[in-house]
Length: 310
Image (tube, rainbow, N blue to C red):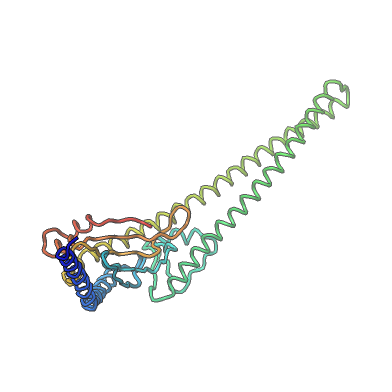
């Protein structure tokens, strides 16, 4: 390789190195400005979410932001529920729990539903509600165990009566006179006891089915209440962030178009294994700018987002 080629390669390497250093320097120089833009946008989102929260839904608590190079802005959003699933339709659930005492910040308002003083210790109340719900289930499970134990005892006693009946029938075939009449009387008593045992067993089974039905109803009420609470919160949350991004998204001028703005609802729901799950929304900066320029609306922006639970 001659000297001229070596000089050319060296020049190219120097230029590339300078260009890389320069781009890093420019990027680093823009970080403080981008941070200010993110802080302003965080304030906008915080205000929007505070204004949209409803008294009977899972409540927005706070929002924090960070920035990842080549990825974008990530907003971590926490809610009042913190994954325990605060119940929206609490009236039916609470009144179904035996001896459920109402805390001072909760009022059962007849047919109008339930009124909640959200300035009270709501999280503590929600936790106590879940505990009372679980205690009611424990009591019913204990009652079911007692019923099954009683059913086993009845089955044993019935088998004993059946054995005694077979012995009496055998004796009846050989008895005569006074003894025959006595055996017939004893058989009649055994038949009466067997009839009574069958009636008691049917009563036990009916009681057991009623307990199982109540447990199932309460569980369905709880799931439905949670589902409604999640849905109500998500409707307000998505509407708020969609409107905010479309109206004020241009404030993130320092964010490259190939990066994104993400929202992470921390520990928002629980999976079938009762593990806390985050709900994640990822919006491309390109789509946000399109909405700011009114090329798409907020509903279309929300539809374009990647949404998943993790």
